[in-house]
Length: 216
Ligand code: BG6
Ligand code: MG
Image (cartoon, rainbow, N blue to C red; front, top):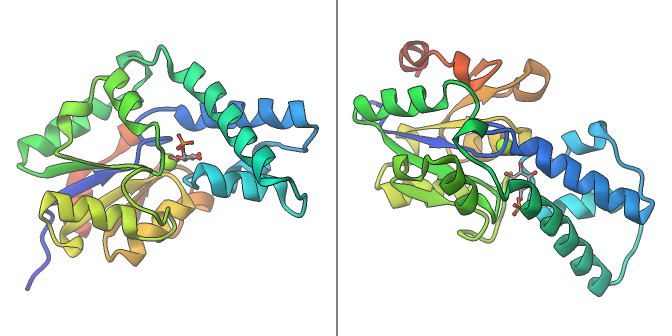
C-alpha cells in the first residue's frame, strides 16, 4: 500500500523548547560539584539520551557505587526540575504553535515522543499539551532512544502504522530510533548533527511542511 502521512511525532527537548540547554546546565553543575570534566562537546553525546545512560557516558571508566550513582541522578534531576519550574509559553521556540496548528488543520494526528521522564510537566508549562493525542515519554517504554520503542509506542497509541509517521528530532540518538522504527525523519539543527535525517531545517520555525509532504 502507498505510504501517506497520517501522524507527526515530535521530540521535546531541543525541538519544541530549549530545555536541551537546561539539561546541559544541570549536568554541568553536578560535574563541577563532583570534579568530573564536562563540556559542550561531551554534552553533544547526551542529546536525546536517557538520564541513566547520560551519567554512564559522563563517568566513562570512572566507577561509582550504585548508591552514589542514584544520588547523582537524583541531584541532576533536582537541578533540572528547578530550571523548568517556571517554564511557560514564552519558552516555546518561535513558530512551534503555528506548525502544530497547521498540522492539526490538515487532519494530521500529533504525538510527543520524548526520552524525558519530565516531559509532561514541560508540555503543560509550555501550554501545548492539548495538541497531542498521545504522549510517549521516558516512563512509557523500557528501552530508550536510540531503540525505536518510544516512537513505535507513540504510533501504536495513535493507531497509525510506523510507515505513515513523521518524526521531528534534534538528536542523533532520536534520528536513529525513528529510522529503525521505519519512519520519515525531519532533523532540526546543524547538518553535522542531523545529517542522517531525510530532510532537515536549522530550526523548527523554519520547517516547510509543503516540502516535507512533497519529499515523503
Ligand atoms: C531527552 C534529553 O529528551 O531526555 C536528554 O534530550 C535527557 O538530554 C533525557 O537526558 C532524559 O530526561 P529526564 O528529564 O528524564 O532526565
Ligand atoms: Mg531532543
